[in-house]
Image (cartoon, rainbow, N blue to C red; front, side, top):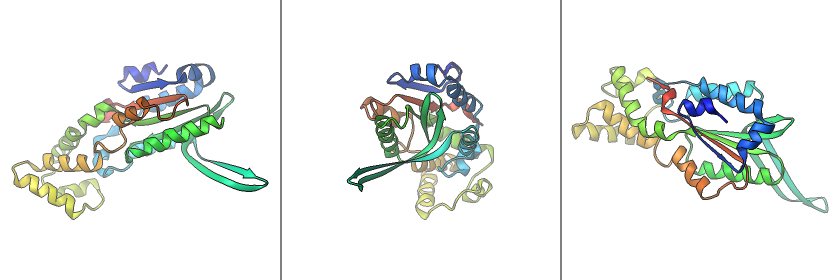
Length: 243
């Protein structure tokens, strides 16, 4: 399964027989995911311009999935006794895909706080236990992209000749806080050039170890979070970033 993605450097983890389920019940849907991702490109400028939020490339991926039938959905459960609701729970899923074989739930965690992985996996577990979904999938930043983020941002600023705070205006970034500017100022005063100083602060602040990326997702899955729901996990590789 997903041979093209693996060949292109995507990290793929399949758990709890998700591969068998995809191959038998969701072969067309697997092809939809693979095609959408194999064509995905992220201009490095979007990493900076997003300010750590969802990049335009990720928004384009969402739009493509929506147009292909992978719609946002709220699952609502109620437990009633004698007609009176005792428990009421809502699970919002970014993308679900319905077919004759069942329902796939998919979340894109580009850059949230890492506890969102717990939320996603626990949602999958509960929805699968209620037969509301057949399996769950999560797409996030891969380990190679995460490790290279500092260098990507630094080279981007060098490429565009950014040597001070004013140069960032070209990226139409959100206003930076006084704390963020102060950290960069201290780093440059200590002898670091501006692109390196900005990249160090920016990546630590916006793409740090406590955000959603492959390593944090693996930690949860290795602990069994989400079991026994069949799972497909995909890490976006460094190779899709265009410098």
